[in-house]
Length: 259
Image 1 (cartoon, helix red, strand yellow):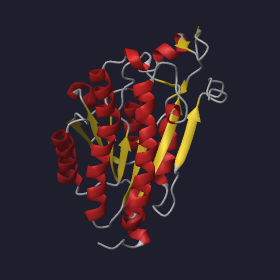
Image 2 (tube, rainbow, N blue to C red; image 1 turned 90 degrees about the vertical axis):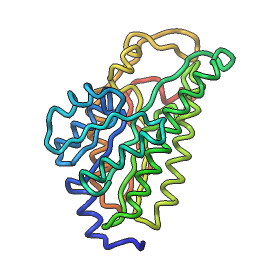
Image 3 (tube, rainbow, N blue to C red; image 1 turned 135 degrees about the vertical axis):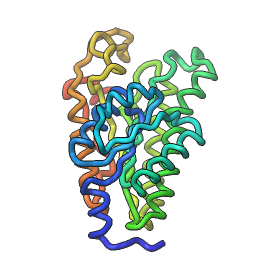
Image 4 (cartoon, rainbow, N blue to C red; image 1 turned 180 degrees about the vertical axis):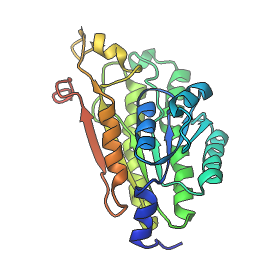
């Protein structure tokens, strides 16, 4: 199917389009989902915990909650089928679901724990992108946008984070491939790399995080709403423009100079 007109694609993708957010039951996914709903998007919230998804959606009439295991192919297919049944299309995927996974030096990481981190962080992002890409390619108007949640660990590692860091480096490769392959179909793909947004998942960082010199020191964090604002900006662009990579961090966190 050829790429359709610029105005049609922008109207669908930029003005109250249909978004899918994974990992929406808590943390960044919760904040991003609520920000998109507040900005007039129709939002499918995907996550493992049905009751938490309902709480995040808060009964919003343009929300859809779909319990989903992103590491499971059939579960992801069911998610996107539910979205298309409800709204007929997909304009935005925020590939946000992820886990820190096992800690320790590489010889201390159990193979099962490595595989679990890869299944959620990398395979899960692939499965969701695969379904979103197929929907965006076939729908009319054609096109859409995928935003992958990388991490500053897509640039440099923390100590003892081989599984997490490897998956986040891999997300960068996925982002670049999606960007290239999506050109013919009006599908844009960008990546947001986040450092120390304040969520339950990162709460330990504020009290003490292991540093490269072996010390443990608290690190600064920042309001997760700034991440949501950044994604809203990325999603608001017409499909002829793309933020390929965006890094947002706590200003004084140990990132610059870390690698």
